[in-house]
Image (cartoon, rainbow, N blue to C red):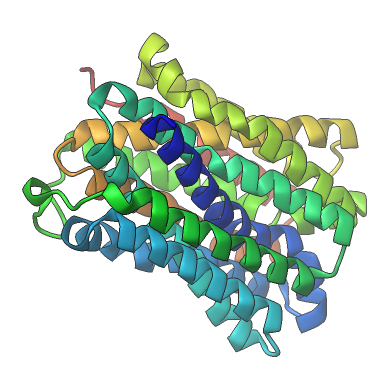
Length: 374
């Protein structure tokens, strides 16, 4: 089999279980988990932020590790952390145990993205790298779609769902170890933990942080908002997650689209779409049909934008691809961590529509932050 296809498929699967199952599925099951543990909105926001915090902690060192021990070991570590964290969530008997497991599961994504970007650079010729990287990145959409389907079928039985997710992840660890056996650490890429931040990287960090904060309305609180606004249960929210994931697969075409219309245009247009999606899903009074349209827009725009940040980062720091992805996705996750805590705090103190519109506006501001001309 062609090496690009094999690596792309394996990376797609690892991203699907780490992002779709270990990280983003928590918001999908949050109403049922909150009911079982009697979590307030503020506490639910703090626990949900743990998934993004775990990502931040892992990705802060992932590039440094990848550049020294190689992509294969770090990618496998991502899968192991995801499986262990989800087993912990499935067996959690207290809020502290749950929070610690959420952090561990979330850390998997921090290890996965830099390692896979480095593997693509190590194993493939330059002409196929952007396409493969953005295809791998779109694995999130498959994971989200599958987790939504599981939620629609199983309803509130979140413990069994997480046990099944962990089993699928263990299989992906085995595949990753086999396929990435030819990936090596780049001797030329070894450098300090934090590179010099030029203007292009600073703009990337600012935009990604704002984008991440805006996205928490759906990832962390979408299920809660829909339960309050439309009285939706886990099955209906699961169907929305499935729509988000299925439409989000367009993010696989980020590399192709950027090559044809330019990164600045793609960045602006899909941030405007993200703002509309956040409003459609989160605002009280939106009809169900509009919520589903908003979910599709959210999946497409979020996955496209993560692909944009991946390509933007590697273009700005081509000699250190793992570090480039670390900076882009760390900024995204910091925004998500702070955004989840802030939204949970704000929504307890003012009407939810005010909070939703404020966070949708963050997406518009992020889109205005432009990459400097080539």
